[in-house]
Length: 256
Image (cartoon, rainbow, N blue to C red; front, side, top):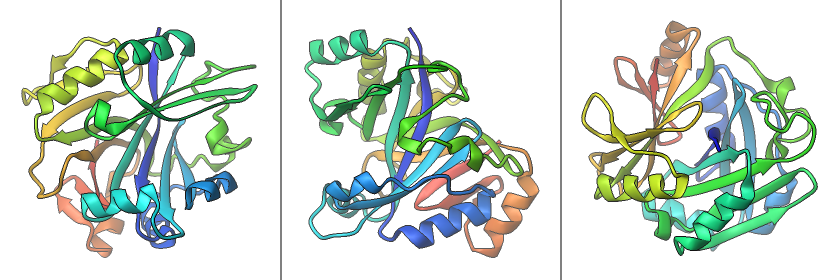
């Protein structure tokens, strides 16, 4: 069985400024906006990075789960790590056996969804989904949350893939062990000694909270095809946070 990092979801207080920042700096394009998020009091935009998706959601009404999450984390930032699996049934059985609560789920003829409660996983929302039907396991294949033609939005001029997600936590070792237990992947350490494990196409690493914000999805590593253009665009917006790191939508982007 495998798991791929297929989508990262960020959350913002306002959608349009966040999307403008991400598209203008990273050189990506919006491929889809999901009208079905109205029921959660949210609006969104999805943008391909290679064959993965970067999503931003924002509340459009008061007293939503998304709005409360923004308050807890002190502003815009990471929200969800969303993965694709090749067999949902044993994944679901594993989650149930571990006593992890499921906060949202749905199933269609082409898609199975399972979103886990962050209080049971630690870190942030962790989601495991499966694509069904033709080309279901193709890395460039269909992905229902991004609409029927997400590939039309691919733009590789500046970025080509999300290589890692960084979860910050008060006790990274405990949260890492829980995620690895759910994913059924062995833990290791990165070159800095931080606990990490690898999905089929990306790493997940767990680090202490050092930015004054509570635990959550704090950063992403992104493979670049034109790092200089990204840095220039980020510098023009005052979004530089390191020599090869920028901050967009309250999230650190480490440029590879």
